[in-house]
Image (tube, rainbow, N blue to C red; front, side, top):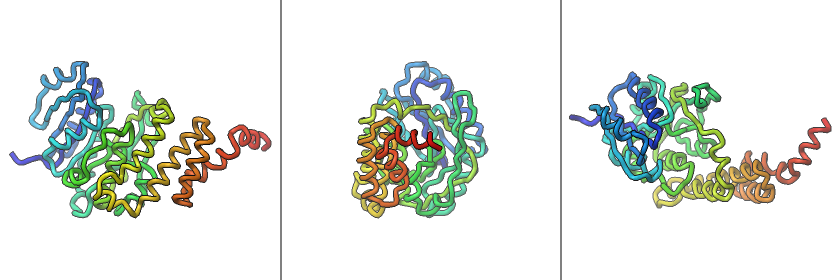
Length: 303
């Protein structure tokens, strides 16, 4: 039997009810030349029994000791047979034409990374925010992708060869491992997207705000510095180094301001501006960090 064109990587951990919904959204796809690689990251909620009771010709089930989502995705990538990889998390959903609309964009041999518009939804399925990328995300799009992550994991498809060339998702990153990976892949190809909402993305509210600030700071810096870990990615991304590191410091400054750590916000904003004078996030943070929230609130009260 010839391999499918698309391999869908679906990691899961102790969310059987949501996994069933994610699988249903795959099986509702109008494009059908795919396999589903479910990687069970050590679930204890009956996922294994349910999966083994519901086998399918297009379904590959892998199980591993609990090691985290990046490890699970890496295992899925290694097991995939398709020319193209698509990613879906167990708490997210695809709309029925998602693959049908994305796959033809790979007919352009220069395109190696494709994504689409997405809707952030709450636990009840109510849409909270719609996001559709702009034209700056087409072609050589690393600069745009550094500036704003418009590519949540369930929206992304890539060529498997480029994914393997870029290496693995870094398993030591607490968050942003997918963003880091997308940037390393995008440095090797052109990017395209479907300007339609084809994914419902369930974002955990307050997820990063629950992380201790020092952990947020170190991981954010590691996310961007990690673009330069392997020699080939470092070579390809060297023209973007100052932009990448400026973004890292600006995002730390923004979070520090939000948490009232004004001294750190000032320091990190200056670091971002030294690396790239035009960093808008840093310039937005800096006056607030210099003047302090109380002073700004008082000024607003005089209006």
